[in-house]
Picture 1: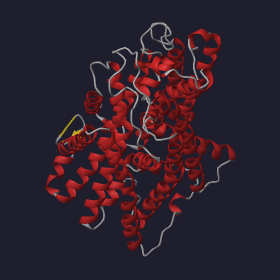
Picture 2: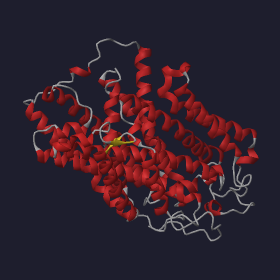
Picture 3: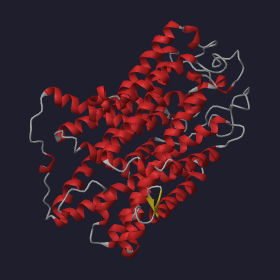
Picture 4: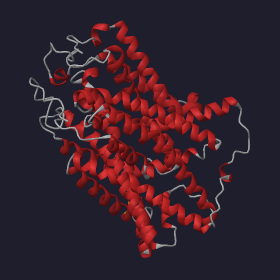
Length: 486
């Protein structure tokens, strides 16, 4: 299926071959299913899901929170997909509809910086698996894997070698383009199920087929208010974890053969896939207690502790492959579009990706996701910076503009075209973005809101949504298209 043709009248400062509407659409429902598998089946996904099981909630409440949270993500992704599917354009271009053709640079830059953080985190998590495997294979190098003895800016010498190895592998996949990425995630996502099935089979063999979840039993009976609050907090963490992917989803929806295929892939790839992965995660963690004598929440540590060297080698390579899959799809692609959008006539998609990859080293990601409390803090901060943009984009497209969009105006710097606003910037959208982001961050860093910190991304979303709709009512001339067409 062919996509929209390139705009006939466009500014060279707003378009290049990568940002132009796609000409071929090849992604079917299974590709989006595998995309979600790659996004969920990773070390970060395992660690994030496992962190919910130690929040002090009954297991049934955790799974309820997972289901409700991922259903919200599914709906949001379907909504975000529509304008990109319709125009064939990636997020940095579609968001020009809302922020203005030049104001969108700010929105895309924020998304790009957040993607750099996530890209670095995922690269480090994957490389850490190689470090653990290397020490198991060659115990003599263990001192060189300790940052305090042989390290630089918090990462050991072996850690640096592993980090740059994964970093280079990702660039090699990315450099071959979106079709190569699609083929990579088509097998990178499902492969983790095979590895987890083999691992759980080995653990069950060691326990004689016995498994118990008593260690997750909550001794006290929470009140309804406490139970409700716990579920909402867990849902908010799920929303925060997936918020970058929600915002990025348009970058992949533009390649869909139909909206039906996109919705089908999201249906099977989100609620069904996440709950299945969560159950396998819970089963794996529970089995580590009788086999190793203590609970292990890191899948890499679990794999490496097995007595079989072959199992450890295959397990680590599988985890690394799956994590590379999410990193390229969820972070590298979006950042590449975002940085290319800053100067389309000078920066290509690949050059934008190299900028993102370089930034991932500079942020020293191993300092952002090392402990459980840092996991939640990082999720909260990044989510609070992302969800306001999701809210503003959805409010503008579905409520203010009522699904009317002018594809050619997305690439035009003519002051008489629809998305020029004021000097190419929509001040209403910028104001709502600032308000939503500050509100979300205040829930994290102000002591008065400490109890509700996990709701920061939700607070930012609702504030940005309310502010944008209110300001659009007060200043309708700022948000109304000059020549709206269906």
